[in-house]
Image (cartoon, rainbow, N blue to C red; front, top):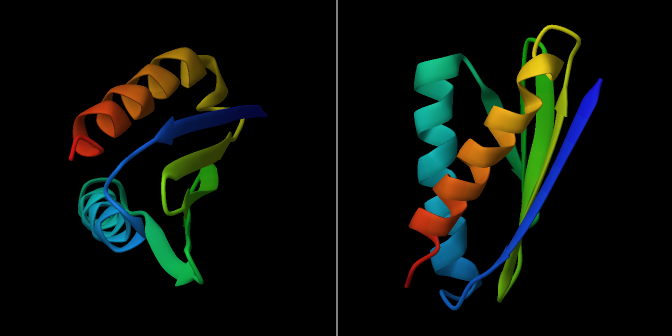
Length: 92
């Protein structure tokens, strides 16, 4: 099982960063059959073969993703996509 951890600083504030995380979760839910829920300031998500969380702070976002056996070989490309998505969406 592969584990991916990505952190990015931001200057959006907690509420704006939460809104961006919610929009991302909605898109993932419709495209990849991802189920998600908020637990405080942490968005927890799950789908077949993967689960993880997005922790939203006042000035930092942390993404943690656990990949199952079938998705583990793609962990490098998945990590790059997460990094690119965060870099694009966290611009104020």
